[in-house]
Image (tube, rainbow, N blue to C red; front, side, top):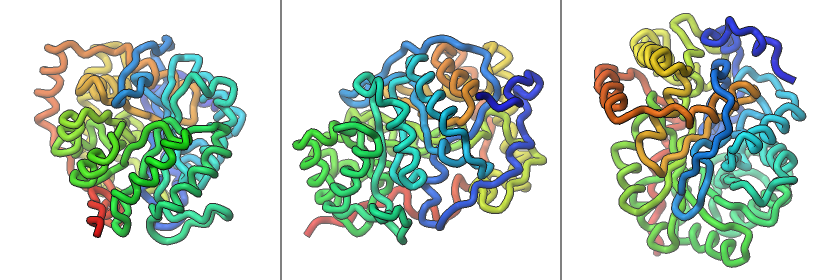
Length: 386
């Protein structure tokens, strides 16, 4: 069942009021995981089959994936209809999406269960990626302080993942954040054991430090890095994307639509309820929003030129950066999933991309992408092994 508001075409580019609600966060340590999906986007203008494929290392996936993080609870704190979330995942597969992203931290556990139920009938035709690394009690789901990439814990986590995902292997397993207490050599050693057992096929890192990537890759090839990357946050262009190109590692973009900002779902009057992480990001503060909305204005102009939506232009721009970059926008609305998948049909020619980037260069984003306490978990280097 669709949300009734999705049947009202007049809301296509103006879905502001729904952002007034907030997502109740459970513990500051879990903020990076909770912020890892894009919220709903405007109504779609395309409904075509996604046939384009890309390579993450040696792993072939659809050029656009689907993040299921918010399918257990949205930014607005509502609990989505589980049958409808399953319908969205299955429709995504029918549309051509083959990359599905989740993590043990989402719920915890619940999004893995939803994804496992939804994909059981076509499991062998898709790529499932999930993430470990937060300190979560595997029996109770209780979130404990900090991180936990102890080798034995990783192996215990994977056993639970396999059950929740209703599968015998995980196609791509990420360390959700680098554990500053565990040498990456020990982490990769545990992953290699799991690969040897056939329980994991490929592995990656999320928001890692450069040297940690190099050390991990030297032990066993890293398939993909998953970092925040969008027109709103281009930090990976400095170090991580060049590193991926050098080492032939794929790159997966979380929050490719800037937690809704790049779809036009946030304007100068938007204010966030207590608990919604966007209200704690200074890039969305009342002081910085007016400046940053210049980016949305640019996207709307190009959306009109290309008969697309701002969100589709944002995804098309990401796809144009490198042939091994794959965005994983998330949503809990069927029309928005179809819109996102259709972004692969939007092509920016070389002259168009040059002109867009020239116009983009005149825009400077103010404010931090996350609260400092959350940013402290990114770009971390694992300790050296004694």
